[in-house]
Image (cartoon, rainbow, N blue to C red; front, top):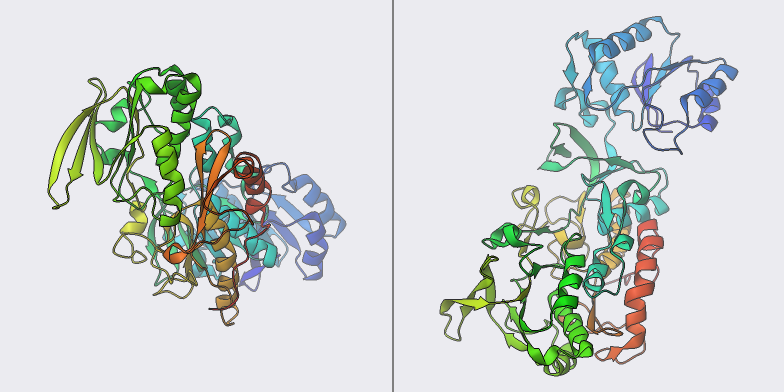
Amino acid sequence: MNIIKLDHQFSVSGQISVDDISAVAAAGYKSIICNRPDYEGGENQPHSEELEAMAKAQGIIFIYLPVKMGAVPTERVEAFQKLMVELPKPILAFCNSGRRAAALHEMARQSNGDKVKVQDSVIDACNWGNAFDVVVIGGGSAGIGVTASLLKRRPTMRIAIIEPSDRHYYQPAWTLVGAGAYDIAETVKPMGNVIPRNAEWIQASATVFDPEQNKVRLDDGRVIGYRQLVVCPGIRTAWEKIEGLEETLGKNGVTSNYRHDLAPYTWELVQGFKSGKAIFTQPPMPIKCAGAPQKAMYLSCDHWLQAGCLENINVEFDTAGAVLFGVADFVPSLMEYVRRYHAKLVFNSNLVKVDGAQKIAYFEIKDANGTVIREAKPFDFLHVTPPQMAPDFLRDSPLADAGGFCKVNEKTLQHTDYANIFSLGDACSSPNAKTAAAARKQIVVVAENLLAEKEDREFTAFYDGYGACPLTVENGKVVLAEFGFGGKLLPTFPLKPTGPSKLYWFLKKTVFPWIYWNGMLKGKEWLAHPRKSH
């Protein structure tokens, strides 16, 4: 328990268990008020009737006065105020984190009879010395993984994850879904199923950072205090940056494996496509999984080759970049497949508009002299990788660098201006490939260094820029590109690091998803530990 005294007669805490009641009695408390609704945290949450029975056995009065987060009805405030007067003291009130109980105490003390929305003046955890030890922004792979790893090291830490979505996705498999090699249903789970058990999930969106006051404002008006902050909200897919795209996605032969609901449509199109013009696009960097745009092309072409219709299909890959892949060592292997599939490569070509009804894609193409021309290209099949950018609330905050990403030391992943802030995953400014494999390595660095900063110890964990991109060059073979800062090859396995392999396909399709759900998200750090010195 983390009991916080608000005055000599009243204290608050987070959720208590049946086993905690004896400690509450030993501490001298005469009354307990439960402000957390039963089943709010699921079936594993201790039920109020069980807690009441144990409290009575210890000679403590137990009152169940549930209060949902948000607007607090007047009658609840009045009932709480009455209990504060009538119950034997000292009193311990609890909810999930203690913040609601503290808010009720403040409102009752102020004798405010109006219906009160719990805002800064009431719910600001810092005012009660009740800030979370760590607040994690984002419930994606980086956010869940780093929370699990922190709790593995310090089980008693009070950690909140701020995440609005009620679903968690394993995005690396969407490329396989688009090739008919993976079940889309296996790529998603309820967010509540992956949130670490001892963490608090705040289902809301962060909107404003106030690093000077150690606060985060949410879209519902709440202000959350923290002692340390981990920023990992991911990267935003900016579909709206391509004119006409959003109106035609999922129809007119326009698709993308970058969206959960569209990856199955990709496979539907691939299966039915027998002839015509197929265009695959890649926008300017940064994007998550930089190899995914061409992976979609390779797997589609492999299907058309096996189906005997590739010779009737004109395949084109338009990339805003100047090279096929950013690490030169892997380009020769990839070019063999480009030639096998008779794909045309167009560099410095950026998709800017789509007319779905007329099936015309518009590109801005830069020539060798830097001159940009707009070219209209008819298509029958169009796979689009959307432009991507840092989330707006991060980009417009004091935490952002010039590109909008959270500004960190690339080796320690600590913010360069605020020592109690760390960042990892797609939202941080470290110049590594934005992949789940990179987050897997970064998790350990942040967990180790955050605790070192908290405990005033020297940093010992340093990130080497590791990232991995399993390039699915055909159905059954993968080129596993593993590399660090500066394009240095960092292979995990004793195979030719730049060649295609059936083993890597097995890892991509079977092993990596299992490790993700059962290892990475649960604080198991298999093959993830960084080097311990510069």
